[in-house]
Length: 166
Image 1 (cartoon, one colour):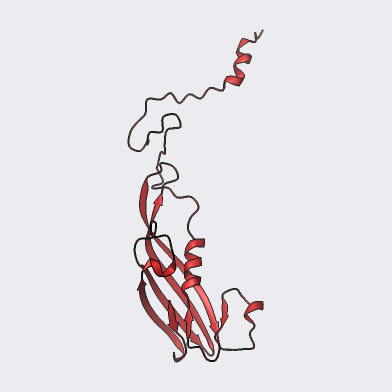
Image 2 (spheres, one colour):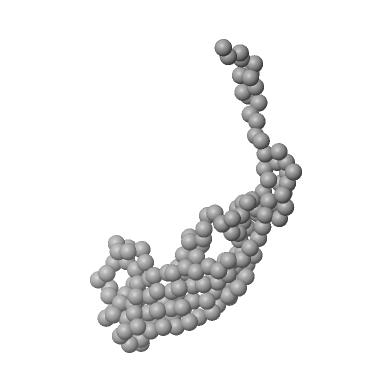
């Protein structure tokens, strides 16, 4: 997503962009809808404070029952672009970028992509009350009740049953 920064007047500017997932090189199996981005640019002097809030729907596999489900997903990315050459981006914040004199636009695509990937949850469940799978027969306990005995017996302790207590 390229945004033209030079020429914007001082103050806040809002934009909305909807782009295909393919442009961000995200997994099409999980990200099947467009990425909708609300962009807020606050121009203060020679600095551009950019906040991009991206939302879409993502297909996950539940970590308990393994069923696929779709959930809304939203992530916010904050960046700062500056025209001030005295600020050295390498020694400042990671999200600070220098806008050279001959360049009008900033390409936010990679920053948005990385932020989406980094903020994906490590563990997801289809619902908080998900019962998961039976550890013995593998039936989805949300759909059916299994007939397995869930009394776990550790046979390593069977020798203790033979002891006589007085």
